[in-house]
Image (cartoon, rainbow, N blue to C red; front, side, top):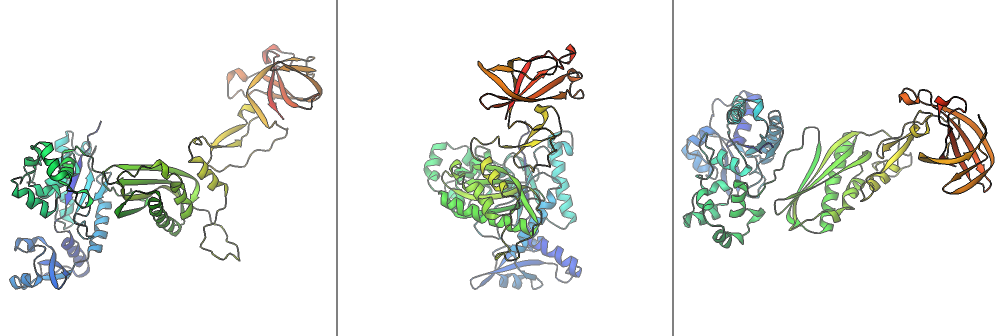
Length: 524
């Protein structure tokens, strides 16, 4: 079994690195103002939001007043902070990183603001080691150095570390020394705790992660277990996540080409009504993007992330490409009783796993709402609804195929597959086929007369009229035993008006064609 390995990539100067790359492309750089900072306004004060490496070396840091920074260094290049552009560019970098590892996730928001998340990535390094070196430690180090070297060529300052858990990798990348693998000597701030909690721990003499890890569990639970902070950031939770005692789900980006919608709520959802409204919103977003691409969903995945850091996933398929928001939402909302929100659901993610082009359809000339989704095959909605109900997982469609042997004259297709054109039948066939054929006792003259009577399930049936024989030869290309096999079929009606489909094995003359036994194969 492959051990989970996570690479944490920290971009300490991402906003200014992004700006410098953009300015270099547009104007060839800033030769006269090499020291770059970004600024934002909080109230009446204008503060530094991010600094470039040279500004940091001069003692400038986020939170410092811009006026004071200009007084110290008059030649600063100051640009207004643009958190949305930073995040958009970080998403582009994350997609670029998918060329190195199979999974990438953005570092989540730490303080509840939208601009605090644009400074790092998590990369799934599990199983990537053999691609870089024979032994795992050397391979992981080469992966880390390869990533940092490529970023350096792009003009992006970065630090990286690999560990068994996201928390440990995050701590080592941001607070550890190069090459350090043990997170226990790191300060408690590496646990992603807020400043107030770090100060409180420091006053208690707990300044290192190792100090917390070696303490008995009970005193820590009494002191911090009931002190629940926003988004579940408690001391015990972060410590357990770092040590691997509690799994930390990561918001992995959908693979390229997939369409996904994500919704984070500040008040956890615990009711079916709340979950239904959230799913409706996600389905509307997904449907809008599918229609814009001229496509429809064939497979969907709904992932719920709960407050207790567990996830629930539901997957389903569709009979035909569909981009109707109401229908997509209904497939999940009608099964909400299968979901357990626990203490509440914080994040919902709806992903289109498979999609295909939708067939174009002409709207009615007098249709009032031309934006309404057209359904060329209404049975597809019924199939979607039935196939995802308990007990109806074996829903299928019958389809006739080209074969004279009755058992092979039809096949079962998945319900979502369209039915191709069926071959024409020259002879009538029963509405109910008995498979395998049922042996009966019959009285008939040889070589080709219809039976005068037969016994089935202990009851004698006297034949009033009959039609036949219809001779069907075996399909020698299917089985060698059918090379000379022959069946003579008769459509018969008994004195009670019941119609049956009987056959005799053999042609009544050559013994190698069959043993002359009679069988009931269908009922009209």
